[in-house]
Image 1 (cartoon, rainbow, N blue to C red):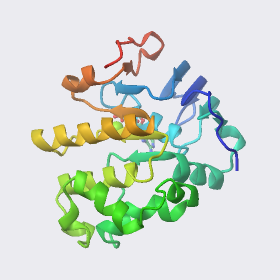
Image 2 (image 1 turned 180 degrees about the vertical axis):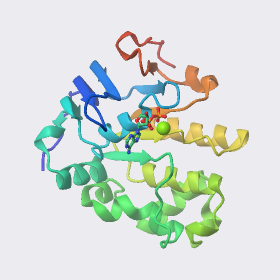
Image 3 (image 1 turned 90 degrees about the vertical axis):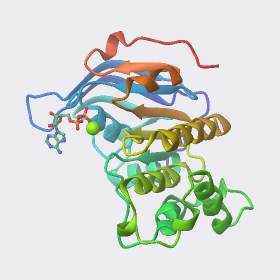
Image 4 (image 1 turned 180 degrees about the horizontal axis):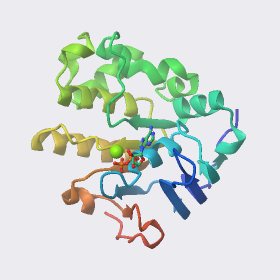
Length: 238
Ligand code: ADP
Ligand code: MG
C-alpha cells in the first residue's frame, strides 16, 4: 500500500465537492491545507457538512469530484479496501455516534485498530497489548470498565472508550466528531488534556468538531464550514 511520505501536509483538499444527491453539494471546498501537527477546530451550524467532511478525510465517503490527499496519499488512487487499511494504520477517529462494537467488551473495542494493522501495533514498541490498553484506559479513567460489555456503559463512558480506541498506537491524524458532547465539565477537561498531550507527543494532527465555542482558543486554527475559504487563522497555542 502507499506509504505516506514525511514533509507532506496532513490534509490537502483541492476543488473538493461532495453530494449525497446529484445537484446538491454538501461540501464545496476549493482549497484547504492542514499541516502536520496543527490542531484544527472545525466549526459550523448543524447540517453544514462537518460530519460529512470528516467522513471524507477518513476515507469512509468518497469525494464526488476534486482531490483529497491525506498524509500525501491521493485517496482517488486507493480502492475502498485500501482506504480502510489506510484508516486503520494512520487515523484515529472518534465518531459522533461512537461506532463501538456492541458485542465486544471495552478492551477489545480499544484494541480494534491494533488488531487491524500490524504497523500500528508496532508503534507500541515492546509494550504488551494489555499494558497499552491499561495505560490509555487509566488516562481516560475507564480501567474498571475494561471487561464490561459496551451495552452497560453510559454515553459518557462510551465516549471515553471511543477516544481510547482512536488514540491507541499513536495514529498521525486524529479526527474527532463532537467528542466532548456527552462529558461533564471535569471529564471534558481531562479528555481534552489527554487529547492535546497525545497529539503533541506523537506530533499528530487533530481535526476536531464541536458546537462548543469555548473550546476554540485551545486550537491552533479554526476552520468555519460554509466560509471555509476565508477561514480565520488563529495564533498557535504555545
Ligand atoms: P453536520 O455534521 O455539520 O451537522 P452533516 O455532515 O451530518 O452535517 O450533514 C450535512 C448535510 O448532508 C445535511 O443536510 C444532512 O441532512 C445531509 N446528509 C448527511 N448524511 C446524509 C446521508 N447519509 N444521506 C443523505 N444526506 C445526508
Ligand atoms: Mg455532525
